[in-house]
Length: 299
Image (cartoon, rainbow, N blue to C red):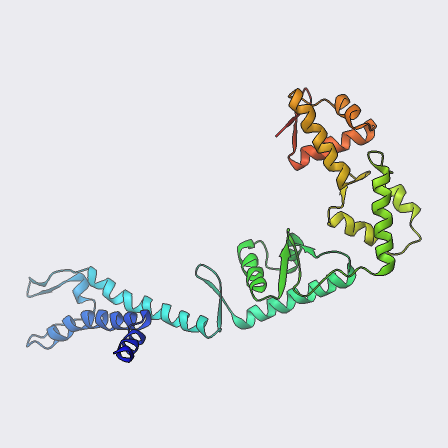
């Protein structure tokens, strides 16, 4: 009993049902033509006779039945879908999204291209977590068809060829490895900016002081990428702890009075105008505050 039921379930599949429907629809189209053409009259008929109707000797013999056109189209569409399904099941076609497919060989070319430019990027910037998603899209060289590009990248992520984190992609097995001398630089920079507080040195000046250290710029950039340091503008950076303290200061001022004025904010955190202005402007750009004619308000 169980074996018979199992055998029945195997036969009763969507594919077999579609095949049966295709056969029935084909019969429905061809049978009227066969029966009419076998009559004793010399009448020219075709498969489409049932669609447009037929007249003989000035009389209507067969009324138009446009619905029969559907019986002809259904098997064609079904067969195409079955063919595409078979190609995707065997891996010959790769589905990007909806009804968009590409050949597996083309997909392999895109995979090689992505792995190659990410390998080159990791070699040049070993301390960066990865490449920005927009840069990766441009590297794929597929024009402005973002949907297709994102479909390809999504498949590569699913196949564990690449990984993405916060808009940054990298090869799946890539990890940032900090060497001993680089680790010392990391700690030196972090301690320096914690000491600076709300009075940081101009970034160019700070970099110039360490220009003899070859890896210093790369280490500094890695801290920016990890958001340990926040770049306020071209001139100043701030440690994330002090950036968060500045945000908290705005919230406390706004709790007492809706509008946060520059002078009041500057006095609250104890910094100069040259640092307070870029902090507030960064808040505006990030959507934390909104600048009005009277000052800043929380968004």
